[in-house]
Image 1 (cartoon, rainbow, N blue to C red):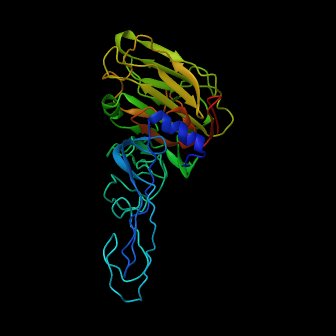
Image 2 (cartoon, one colour):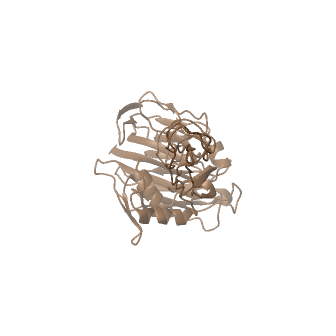
Image 3 (cartoon, rainbow, N blue to C red):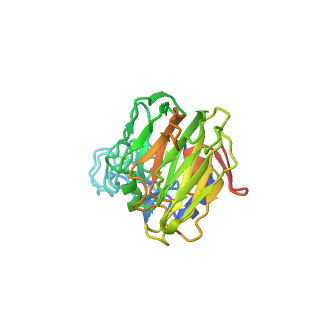
Amino acid sequence: MRRLRTQNLIFAITTTFGLAACSGGSGGGGGGTGTGTDTDTGTTGTTATGTSTTGLPTTGSSTTTGPDTDSGPSTDTDTAGDTGTAGDTGTGTGGSSTGGSSTGGGVCGDGNVDPGETCDDGNNDPFDTCSNSCNVTPLALWYPLDGDASNYGNLSGYGATTSNGFSYGAGKTGMAGVCNDAQPGFVIPDLRDVLLANPRFTLSLWVRDTNPSAFARLFTMRTASGGWETNHGNVPNHTFRTCADGTNGFSNCAFPDVDLGDDAWHHLLWRYDGAGTNDGEGASMEIFLDGNHVATLDNPTSAAIVNMAMSADGSFCAPGGNVFTNVEFEIDDIRLYTTILPEEVQCVGLVGGTWDDNAMTCTP
């Protein structure tokens, strides 16, 4: 994915999460010989706990250092070969100073987990499982769908199952899942357990709606007493609705005014800021399309949509009602974050768009 594009956006996201900048400075200089000295005038910064520089909160801590200015190389006023006083890092044999990593010798992004790092996946992508400050992000489940149904998120297990009619083709990025079956095409087993433990989450994916059919469900975990689903409704067109049920008889639907009939890829995202799984601990569900807020499924009594009564598994590309015709969607890059992603983070990090902080809109 992309790095944040402007300093203004970095500042906005930093303000949102209360982040500290994380960039390692140069280490202390090496020792000189003769009467030369090697002075390190750098200062050590503070320790930022639980955040990364680019918008995703992290579960580790990152050490920020800087600036760390080494005034070397040291000056040797004697002839070569004289033995003088050792500099900062020990004795030296020449007139140059050598700086090491300010975090104990490692560099974030080199693929090695060094002191001060909780992970290092060898890249600087701040929106995958390891931030660009080398701390674990809240990306719990991640299905790139590049030819397999494996989970590449930070939560181990939860590999998905696919139907006989499910295949892989060209995707939004890399490959994608192609649904074409009268059975649920892509199923995440025991997703309910993950959501019960993390009732505050962001779920997203890319979708291309190729051949709509009535009641076709893009995603469902819905039962009569809990969970939600996004479907076509009883009219076979390219518009979606999202409906949910919950505790104390709660039931409601939201109807975003969107049409996905342009045969293009679109990014769909759900946010649910629940406090728990009991009645009164629920929240409204927000729905975003291509980084823009398009609907809110209101929940005025805070009924728990995420509760034990919801379906145990999360199903994508599922038939609905009594209509068991083939459901045809193309899906890609399914992600579950156990946090609420701000709009600008969604836009830049997941959609790859440009965020307008004044209009609060995303241009894909």
